[in-house]
Amino acid sequence: MPMSVSLRPGPLWRTRKPMHKPISSLLLIIKEHHAPARETGQAMSLWLRARGVDTISVSSRRDGDALAEAGRHADAALVLGGDGAMLGAARALADLSIPLLGVNFGKVGFLAEVPAEDWRPWLEALFAGEFHEERHTALVWRVLRPGADTAASGRAVNDVVVARGQVARAVSLDLSVDGVFLSRLRCDGLIVSTPLGATAYSASSGGPLAFPTLDAHIVTAVSPFAGAFPPLVLPAATPVTLTASGDNDDVHLTVDGQESLPLKTGDLIEVRGVPGVVPLLVRDPRWYLRRLGRRGFILPGPGHYAPPR
Image 1 (spheres, rainbow, N blue to C red):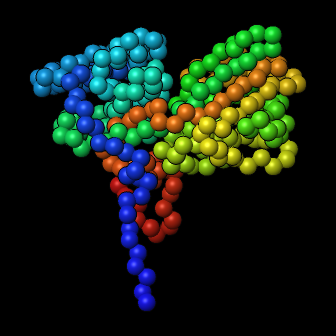
Image 2: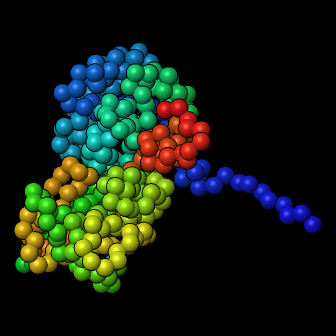
Image 3: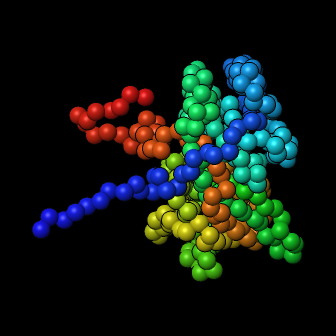
Protein backbone atom coordinates (compact mmCIF):
# COMPACT_ATOMS: atom_id res chain seq x y z
CA MET A 1 0.00 0.00 0.00
CA PRO A 2 1.55 3.35 -0.98
CA MET A 3 2.63 5.59 1.88
CA SER A 4 0.83 8.92 2.17
CA VAL A 5 3.15 11.81 2.88
CA SER A 6 1.91 15.21 3.96
CA LEU A 7 4.27 18.11 3.46
CA ARG A 8 3.59 20.80 6.04
CA PRO A 9 5.34 24.12 6.46
CA GLY A 10 8.60 23.54 8.32
CA PRO A 11 10.71 25.68 10.64
CA LEU A 12 11.17 28.41 8.05
CA TRP A 13 7.58 29.42 8.69
CA ARG A 14 7.21 28.56 12.38
CA THR A 15 9.93 30.99 13.40
CA ARG A 16 8.23 33.99 11.80
CA LYS A 17 5.12 35.97 12.56
CA PRO A 18 3.40 38.70 10.55
CA MET A 19 3.64 42.29 11.72
CA HIS A 20 0.18 43.12 13.03
CA LYS A 21 1.06 46.44 14.67
CA PRO A 22 0.65 49.37 12.27
CA ILE A 23 3.80 51.42 11.76
CA SER A 24 3.28 55.05 12.68
CA SER A 25 6.82 55.94 13.73
CA LEU A 26 10.20 54.82 12.35
CA LEU A 27 13.69 55.31 13.71
CA LEU A 28 16.27 55.90 10.94
CA ILE A 29 19.80 54.95 12.00
CA ILE A 30 22.19 56.37 9.40
CA LYS A 31 25.82 55.39 8.78
CA GLU A 32 27.98 58.27 9.98
CA HIS A 33 30.14 60.23 7.50
CA HIS A 34 28.50 58.45 4.57
CA ALA A 35 26.98 60.95 2.14
CA PRO A 36 24.87 58.46 0.10
CA ALA A 37 23.33 57.02 3.28
CA ARG A 38 22.62 60.51 4.63
CA GLU A 39 21.00 61.63 1.36
CA THR A 40 18.90 58.46 1.18
CA GLY A 41 17.84 58.98 4.79
CA GLN A 42 16.63 62.48 3.97
CA ALA A 43 14.68 61.19 0.95
CA MET A 44 13.18 58.40 3.05
CA SER A 45 12.08 60.82 5.75
CA LEU A 46 10.24 62.98 3.19
CA TRP A 47 8.66 59.88 1.60
CA LEU A 48 7.53 58.52 4.97
CA ARG A 49 6.21 61.79 6.32
CA ALA A 50 4.16 62.26 3.15
CA ARG A 51 2.46 58.99 4.15
CA GLY A 52 1.81 60.09 7.73
CA VAL A 53 4.72 58.24 9.34
CA ASP A 54 6.81 60.08 11.93
CA THR A 55 10.59 59.66 11.64
CA ILE A 56 13.55 60.23 13.93
CA SER A 57 17.02 60.22 12.31
CA VAL A 58 20.17 59.49 14.31
CA SER A 59 23.78 58.60 13.53
CA SER A 60 24.87 54.98 13.78
CA ARG A 61 27.82 56.14 15.92
CA ARG A 62 25.61 57.34 18.77
CA ASP A 63 26.23 55.37 21.95
CA GLY A 64 23.88 52.55 22.86
CA ASP A 65 21.92 54.51 25.49
CA ALA A 66 21.31 57.38 23.05
CA LEU A 67 20.11 54.98 20.33
CA ALA A 68 17.80 53.25 22.80
CA GLU A 69 16.35 56.57 23.95
CA ALA A 70 15.77 57.67 20.34
CA GLY A 71 13.99 54.40 19.57
CA ARG A 72 11.83 54.27 22.68
CA HIS A 73 8.66 55.36 20.85
CA ALA A 74 9.41 53.88 17.42
CA ASP A 75 7.53 50.91 15.97
CA ALA A 76 10.53 49.73 13.93
CA ALA A 77 14.01 50.86 12.90
CA LEU A 78 15.54 51.29 9.46
CA VAL A 79 19.33 50.94 9.51
CA LEU A 80 21.05 52.66 6.58
CA GLY A 81 24.53 51.14 6.58
CA GLY A 82 26.26 47.79 6.44
CA ASP A 83 26.32 44.76 8.69
CA GLY A 84 28.36 46.66 11.30
CA ALA A 85 25.66 49.29 11.66
CA MET A 86 23.04 46.54 11.93
CA LEU A 87 24.99 44.83 14.72
CA GLY A 88 25.42 48.02 16.71
CA ALA A 89 21.75 48.92 16.35
CA ALA A 90 20.61 45.43 17.34
CA ARG A 91 22.73 45.51 20.51
CA ALA A 92 21.46 48.95 21.47
CA LEU A 93 17.77 48.27 20.79
CA ALA A 94 17.48 44.68 22.06
CA ASP A 95 15.73 45.70 25.29
CA LEU A 96 13.05 47.55 23.30
CA SER A 97 12.13 44.59 21.07
CA ILE A 98 11.54 46.83 18.05
CA PRO A 99 12.29 45.06 14.75
CA LEU A 100 15.10 46.18 12.46
CA LEU A 101 15.28 46.38 8.68
CA GLY A 102 18.62 47.03 7.00
CA VAL A 103 19.24 49.16 3.92
CA ASN A 104 22.54 48.00 2.46
CA PHE A 105 25.28 50.63 2.20
CA GLY A 106 28.03 48.21 3.22
CA LYS A 107 30.37 45.80 1.43
CA VAL A 108 28.85 42.44 2.38
CA GLY A 109 25.28 43.24 3.31
CA PHE A 110 24.44 39.83 4.73
CA LEU A 111 22.02 41.30 7.29
CA ALA A 112 20.82 44.29 5.26
CA GLU A 113 18.08 43.08 2.91
CA VAL A 114 16.95 46.30 1.21
CA PRO A 115 19.02 47.51 -1.80
CA ALA A 116 20.10 51.11 -1.28
CA GLU A 117 19.41 52.11 -4.87
CA ASP A 118 15.85 50.72 -4.98
CA TRP A 119 14.36 51.18 -1.51
CA ARG A 120 10.92 52.61 -2.40
CA PRO A 121 9.28 49.33 -3.55
CA TRP A 122 10.60 47.65 -0.40
CA LEU A 123 9.05 50.25 1.90
CA GLU A 124 5.80 50.02 -0.03
CA ALA A 125 5.90 46.26 0.58
CA LEU A 126 6.56 46.89 4.27
CA PHE A 127 3.43 49.02 4.62
CA ALA A 128 1.47 46.53 2.51
CA GLY A 129 2.12 43.87 5.17
CA GLU A 130 4.52 41.75 3.12
CA PHE A 131 7.20 41.58 5.84
CA HIS A 132 7.40 39.23 8.78
CA GLU A 133 9.22 39.52 12.07
CA GLU A 134 11.97 36.96 12.63
CA ARG A 135 13.53 36.63 16.10
CA HIS A 136 17.13 35.62 16.75
CA THR A 137 19.34 34.60 19.63
CA ALA A 138 21.78 37.07 21.19
CA LEU A 139 24.65 36.39 23.57
CA VAL A 140 25.03 37.84 27.04
CA TRP A 141 28.52 37.88 28.52
CA ARG A 142 30.24 38.94 31.69
CA VAL A 143 33.80 39.07 32.99
CA LEU A 144 34.40 38.11 36.63
CA ARG A 145 37.72 39.29 38.10
CA PRO A 146 39.27 37.70 41.21
CA GLY A 147 38.69 39.86 44.27
CA ALA A 148 36.12 42.03 42.52
CA ASP A 149 32.55 42.01 41.38
CA THR A 150 31.64 41.71 37.71
CA ALA A 151 34.31 43.67 35.85
CA ALA A 152 32.23 44.11 32.72
CA SER A 153 29.16 42.69 30.99
CA GLY A 154 27.20 43.17 27.81
CA ARG A 155 25.42 41.68 24.86
CA ALA A 156 26.56 40.43 21.45
CA VAL A 157 24.60 39.75 18.27
CA ASN A 158 27.27 38.01 16.19
CA ASP A 159 30.01 36.74 18.48
CA VAL A 160 32.25 37.06 21.50
CA VAL A 161 35.95 36.41 20.77
CA VAL A 162 38.81 35.93 23.23
CA ALA A 163 42.20 36.37 21.55
CA ARG A 164 45.46 38.32 21.64
CA GLY A 165 45.34 42.00 20.81
CA GLN A 166 48.38 43.18 18.83
CA VAL A 167 50.78 40.22 19.00
CA ALA A 168 50.10 37.07 16.97
CA ARG A 169 50.69 34.54 19.75
CA ALA A 170 48.58 31.72 21.14
CA VAL A 171 46.48 32.10 24.28
CA SER A 172 45.86 29.56 27.05
CA LEU A 173 42.20 29.10 27.95
CA ASP A 174 40.39 26.68 30.25
CA LEU A 175 37.00 25.84 28.76
CA SER A 176 33.97 24.58 30.71
CA VAL A 177 30.44 24.03 29.41
CA ASP A 178 27.49 23.95 31.83
CA GLY A 179 29.93 23.53 34.71
CA VAL A 180 31.78 20.60 33.11
CA PHE A 181 35.48 21.13 32.37
CA LEU A 182 36.19 20.20 28.73
CA SER A 183 39.65 21.33 27.75
CA ARG A 184 42.72 23.44 28.40
CA LEU A 185 43.18 25.02 25.00
CA ARG A 186 46.27 26.56 23.48
CA CYS A 187 44.95 28.38 20.43
CA ASP A 188 44.97 31.68 18.57
CA GLY A 189 41.58 32.48 20.03
CA LEU A 190 38.14 31.15 20.88
CA ILE A 191 34.85 32.27 19.35
CA VAL A 192 31.36 31.93 20.81
CA SER A 193 28.90 32.87 18.07
CA THR A 194 25.18 33.01 17.54
CA PRO A 195 23.60 31.17 14.60
CA LEU A 196 23.04 34.58 12.99
CA GLY A 197 26.75 35.35 13.40
CA ALA A 198 27.96 31.92 12.31
CA THR A 199 28.77 33.23 8.81
CA ALA A 200 31.28 35.70 10.25
CA TYR A 201 34.55 34.94 12.10
CA SER A 202 33.34 31.49 13.19
CA ALA A 203 32.85 30.25 9.61
CA SER A 204 36.24 31.58 8.51
CA SER A 205 37.78 29.59 11.39
CA GLY A 206 36.13 26.32 10.40
CA GLY A 207 32.89 26.66 12.33
CA PRO A 208 29.59 25.38 10.93
CA LEU A 209 26.89 27.38 9.23
CA ALA A 210 23.71 27.33 11.32
CA PHE A 211 20.18 28.33 10.42
CA PRO A 212 19.85 31.79 12.00
CA THR A 213 16.68 31.23 14.03
CA LEU A 214 18.03 28.22 15.93
CA ASP A 215 18.08 28.61 19.71
CA ALA A 216 21.76 27.73 19.97
CA HIS A 217 25.29 29.05 20.10
CA ILE A 218 28.53 27.76 18.62
CA VAL A 219 31.99 27.43 20.17
CA THR A 220 34.89 27.46 17.67
CA ALA A 221 38.60 27.40 18.46
CA VAL A 222 40.90 29.40 16.17
CA SER A 223 43.91 27.27 15.14
CA PRO A 224 44.09 25.01 18.24
CA PHE A 225 47.73 24.09 18.86
CA ALA A 226 47.39 20.45 19.93
CA GLY A 227 44.59 17.94 20.31
CA ALA A 228 41.25 17.74 18.59
CA PHE A 229 38.70 20.44 19.30
CA PRO A 230 35.84 20.32 16.79
CA PRO A 231 33.30 23.15 16.89
CA LEU A 232 30.54 22.68 19.47
CA VAL A 233 26.89 23.53 18.85
CA LEU A 234 25.11 24.01 22.18
CA PRO A 235 21.60 24.90 23.37
CA ALA A 236 21.32 28.66 23.71
CA ALA A 237 20.89 28.74 27.50
CA THR A 238 23.95 26.54 28.15
CA PRO A 239 26.69 28.65 29.78
CA VAL A 240 30.19 28.58 28.32
CA THR A 241 32.94 29.54 30.77
CA LEU A 242 36.51 30.53 29.84
CA THR A 243 39.38 31.23 32.22
CA ALA A 244 42.52 32.91 30.97
CA SER A 245 45.45 30.89 32.34
CA GLY A 246 49.23 31.09 31.94
CA ASP A 247 51.02 33.93 30.15
CA ASN A 248 48.14 35.87 28.68
CA ASP A 249 49.42 39.41 28.28
CA ASP A 250 47.51 41.50 25.76
CA VAL A 251 44.46 39.22 25.66
CA HIS A 252 41.19 40.91 24.78
CA LEU A 253 37.50 40.07 24.70
CA THR A 254 35.96 41.46 21.50
CA VAL A 255 32.23 41.88 20.93
CA ASP A 256 30.88 41.73 17.37
CA GLY A 257 34.26 42.92 16.11
CA GLN A 258 33.39 46.39 17.41
CA GLU A 259 33.99 46.60 21.17
CA SER A 260 37.11 45.39 22.98
CA LEU A 261 37.95 44.76 26.63
CA PRO A 262 41.46 43.91 27.92
CA LEU A 263 41.57 40.78 30.09
CA LYS A 264 43.83 39.80 32.97
CA THR A 265 45.20 36.39 33.97
CA GLY A 266 42.60 34.66 36.11
CA ASP A 267 39.61 36.47 34.62
CA LEU A 268 36.56 34.26 34.20
CA ILE A 269 34.45 34.91 31.10
CA GLU A 270 30.91 33.55 31.00
CA VAL A 271 28.83 33.55 27.80
CA ARG A 272 25.35 32.17 27.17
CA GLY A 273 22.60 32.66 24.61
CA VAL A 274 19.26 34.40 25.06
CA PRO A 275 16.74 33.33 22.40
CA GLY A 276 14.40 35.69 20.60
CA VAL A 277 15.79 39.09 21.59
CA VAL A 278 17.01 40.25 18.15
CA PRO A 279 13.97 40.92 15.94
CA LEU A 280 14.56 41.44 12.22
CA LEU A 281 12.04 42.28 9.50
CA VAL A 282 12.28 39.90 6.56
CA ARG A 283 10.37 39.78 3.30
CA ASP A 284 11.63 36.48 1.88
CA PRO A 285 11.30 33.53 4.33
CA ARG A 286 14.19 31.82 2.53
CA TRP A 287 16.49 34.87 2.59
CA TYR A 288 19.23 33.08 4.51
CA LEU A 289 19.43 30.11 2.16
CA ARG A 290 19.45 32.34 -0.91
CA ARG A 291 22.11 34.62 0.56
CA LEU A 292 24.47 31.75 1.34
CA GLY A 293 24.86 31.21 -2.37
CA ARG A 294 24.79 34.85 -3.42
CA ARG A 295 27.47 35.82 -0.89
CA GLY A 296 29.72 32.88 -1.76
CA PHE A 297 29.37 30.80 1.42
CA ILE A 298 28.17 27.83 -0.62
CA LEU A 299 29.27 27.54 -4.24
CA PRO A 300 27.51 25.52 -6.95
CA GLY A 301 29.43 22.57 -8.32
CA PRO A 302 30.94 22.70 -11.83
CA GLY A 303 28.31 22.71 -14.52
CA HIS A 304 25.53 23.76 -12.14
CA TYR A 305 23.40 26.83 -12.60
CA ALA A 306 24.37 29.75 -10.41
CA PRO A 307 21.44 32.13 -9.71
CA PRO A 308 21.98 35.80 -10.49
CA ARG A 309 22.99 38.08 -7.66
